[in-house]
Amino acid sequence: MLSVKAGLQCWGDKAKDALVDEQKLFIKEKVFEAVFNSSEEQYKNVLHMHCFMVEKRDGWIKARAFAGGLFQRRYLEEEVTHQLPNWKVLF
Image (cartoon, rainbow, N blue to C red; front, side, top):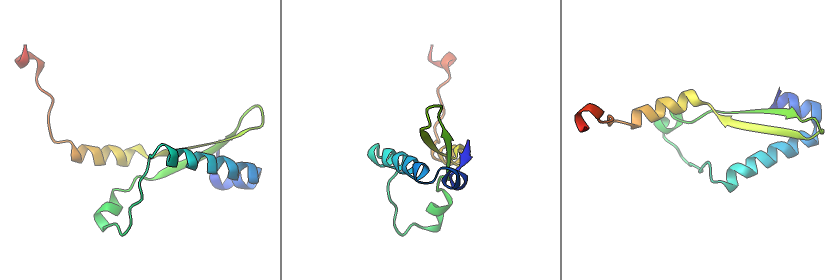
């Protein structure tokens, strides 16, 4: 498993095509939305993206990108303010 920089140096155009395919998937599935002129508070809550590349046994280059979960959990915990009900009280 290689970083993007190392993958591009090692595999060249094949790695670039794998990165483009991964980004196209994000656009197609509407995973992200563009934010223009973001405030400093919004910028602090941006999820960091990590991408790694691997060569499959058949020679195909696969890129896998994912968001850093540490920041996502912190952001979601601030948004969630309700508590789950106590089951003993309900039944």
